[in-house]
Every structure is written in C-alpha cells, then in structure tokens.
Amino acid sequence: MINADLKIQLDRSAKLSITEQIRLSIIRAIESGLLAPGTRLPSWQSLAARLGVARGTVQTAYERLSDSQLIETFGAGGTRVAARAHVIPAQPEKTPPGSFMKAYLEMTAKPGIFQLGIPALETGLPQQLFARARSSNLLKTGSFSSLVYPDPRGEFELRREIAGYLSISRNLQCFPEQVFITSGFASGLGLVLRVLGLEGKTAWMEEPGFRFTRKGLELARLRAAPVPVDAEGLNVDYGIANHPDAALAVVTPGQQAPLGVTMPLRRRLQLLDWAAASGAWIIEDDYLSELQLEGRPAPALASLDKGQRVIHIGSFSKTISPGLRLGFVVAPPELVTPLSEVSGTLAPAPSPVIQLATARFMHDGHYMRRVRRLKRLYLAQSEALCAQLRMRDAQWVKAGLAILLKLPDGVSDSQVVREAMLSGMAPSPFSSWFGTPSWTLQGLLLGIATAPEAQVAAACNRLFEIIDQHR
Image (cartoon, rainbow, N blue to C red; front, side, top):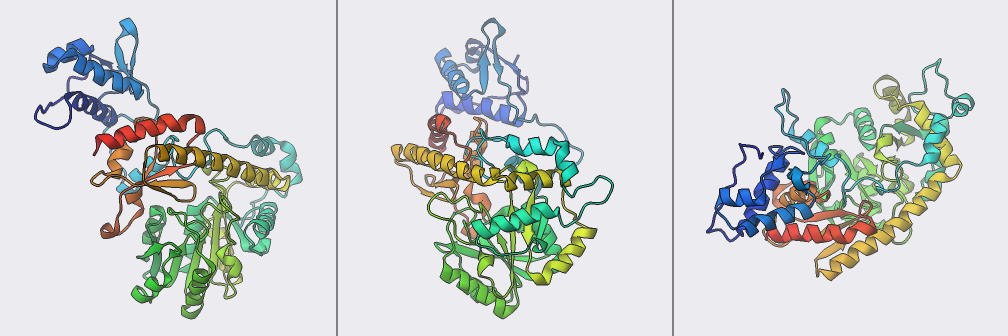
C-alpha cells in the first residue's frame, strides 16, 4: 500500500484544481524518496474515497502521472511508482554534502534531455578511441612504458597533436612544450591558480558565469569580482572602473558561458591592453572551443596575445566525453617552468594509456571528423528545437549550444527544473549562473546537444505543461 507517512492535503479554496493538488503531492513524495520505485499506490477508487473526492478527479491525476512516466499500471498487480535511475531515495547521511557538492551532483547526474555540458546522448564514446586504448600495439609503439614514471606534463604524442590541432582550429601557434595535459578544465584551472599564487588578489569573473569557476576562485583564496556580460562579452570598461586592482580575469571569449556571445576584436584588444598595462593574467576558458554552429569559430584570445598574459585552457569534454577527464593548458613561455614543477610534484597528467589513445585518435583524423559530425547534428537539433518554440510563441534567444528560454513573470526557474527532472529532462536554471543576487534573472537554458529531434516535441510539450502549472 501507499506509504503511511504520505499526507495529501487538499485546499478546496485554492485556485489550483483538486486533480493538480493530488498530482503534485504524489510528485513531491516521489522526488523526496518517500515513495520509492516499485511502491504500490492505492487504486484511484480507494484514494478518492479516502480523500472524499470524485473518482474521476483521482483517475485524471493518475493518468497525468502515468503520461509523465512517474507511475505504471500492471493490471492485477496494481499501480506502482515507476523505476527511475536518477531518483535517489532520501537517506540519512553521516556527512551530508555541502551546497556546492549538491549542485555539482545535480549537474552531473544521469543525462537528461536539454542537459548542458555533454555531447549528444546517442553519439556515445568513439569506438576507434577505445579500440586503440585496448590495443597492446599502442602500448608497445608509444612512448609509454609501465616500468617508468610517465611524464607528469603529459605524453608528448598528445601534446604534439593538440598543438597542431590548435594551430588549425583556433589559430593558436604554440610548441608541444607549452602544452600540459590535465584531467579536464577543473584540473587545468586548479593547476594554473596554484602556479599563479594570487591568494588575496581580485579576479574578474563573468556575470553570469560558470558557478564552478567562481567556486574555484574562492577556494584558491581569490576575491571574485563580478563583471557584467553584454552583447560583446565581458564588459572591460566596467571591470576597470569598478575593480581596477584585479590581478586576474577569467573569460570565455569564444562563446560566453552561458550566453554564447563571441567577444569581438575591439573588446579582445582592450582586454589584452589592460592585462599588459596592469601586469594581470587572463585565463581563457575555451568553452565549446570550435563547436560554433553559425559561421567559423573565432580565433583563440591567446592567438592575439603579444604580451604573453593569456593562459589557454581547453578540454575534450564536449567534443568526446566528460568521462575521459581529459583537458589541456597552453602556457605562455614564462610559466612553462613553474607549471612543469607543479605538474611533477602536485598535479601530474592523467593515465598515459588514454592520452596515447586520444593522440592516435587525433592523428588518424577521427577527432576532426567527429567535430564536423557533431556540428551538423547540433545544427539540425537546434533548428528542430527553435521550431517547437516558435509554435508556442515563446520568448527565447540562441546561446551557443543552448537556447535561453524566458519564463513568465513570477515563475521560478529552479522549481521548474526540479519538476522537469522527474520527467527525464535536465535544463539548467539561468539564475544559478549568477553570483550577485541583485543581478539574477530567471530563465531556462535548454541544451541543444542532448535534445534529439525525435524527442524534442514531446519534451517541449511536457516542459511547457510544467511552466503553465507554475504561472
């Protein structure tokens, strides 16, 4: 039977219908873990008698829950809570995670439709890459040997391939010796912040911007100073006027995260001039790198850097998979030696096996073909999603590999996201990208990569049902 602790309180004076009150009560019980997967619900006739409402009222609520795939009917077996891999029953924890880890675990949960930061769900991991990783020939012919410690800066073969690829795709000319292999963007950021040693200094941080970067600056003992983003990216004039003592700026000039705007040449030169004049450093987060859907991707900011103040950080998370935990840092010559020392003692490169497999994957042309294929796929998925939004007269703007959807006044994006997750969707609440409460805006970031054309219509139908329920 239904969990005895479940309480369905009905307010007959509320504007919300009785059917909707019942449906939302059961959703909250499922989301909290009170109703675990497989729990049997009472028949709609029994629940109607218990609540003192018409049978059809409960039946309609059950039908809506079934349409959302939250419950299943098994004939004589009754109606039960559906199995959902991403719903974790509430359990007491001896050491509960902090708010940051809670947000991190939510963002990195089981992939859902509209999720940001990962490649298309159906593309999976490239077979050519892992076939190479399993190949004994790779280990015999590469520089890797299990009998010696690997180069903490990364395998030379991969560093050489990355340097060559950046010269073509990002117009960034560098030597393999300037490339350091990391376990993704976060690892690269940590490595760089440790080397720069700017504890107690001020760092410009895009507003809105990636919350984990903001947290990284905080953990490195820097003061993150919010600088607004306009149609040309980070507002350098604002930063100079309001935080003139900054020793660092962290920017996403190629496609700003999350708004997707590209910083034009004039603004880039202004930012570089500021860094050169003040002796500040710039960390270029090459967010989305060459995954530009319209036109050619802009060159890397570091390609313009004559003063050698830009540290370029990239990763393979969005072009191959975040599961690789593979990224890279391109350092100005001045920082090569200190980065080598920190890599050798505190932050060595990840497994040589996956590095060498990735190097061969790039060398054989598979990586470049994969990027081209992803861009074609994402362009088609973007057009399909935009068509659905036009049909609904929604207000939205393109934001790189996402669509920023405006919500009706008074609707909380975080509440919509929580309910959408129960239906297999994982949009990002726009408000979570802000660090300054007074600047915070509401909206939904709908990831394009994880919105397959075959599923986007049904997903939009359900998403707009949820939004309408919160008006």
